[in-house]
Image (tube, rainbow, N blue to C red):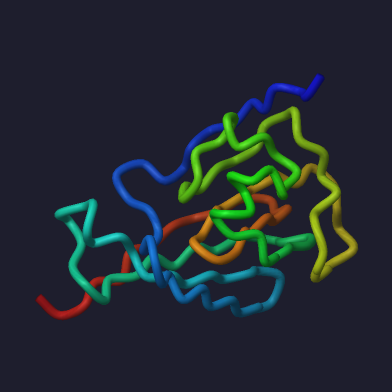
Length: 142
């Protein structure tokens, strides 16, 4: 029997562009910075070209793997598709091991007290272990 995943959905009133979020990752010191295009179709507060910058502070390791939405619903990921809704950003509290899927990029040796983050995109899945996160919205000229 699969464990029940305890989680917090972090993408409230926003999420990634449903077709082409164009995930861009950058390492700055001990932080992993992700920029993505936002879903302006679903959320009126955003327009085409608006982005989110998510900083994962003091990151230990991350995985940006090729599990897409179809694979997820066909049961090809390590999570039962009935537990977490595709296309959202989560913090996993418990119920999912921290052995990230390959490929894995390790950024430090500091694995103590890391929080587990997961974000589902159209064509890939992102998981990260880090101390904390913050989200900033980058708006195009209005």
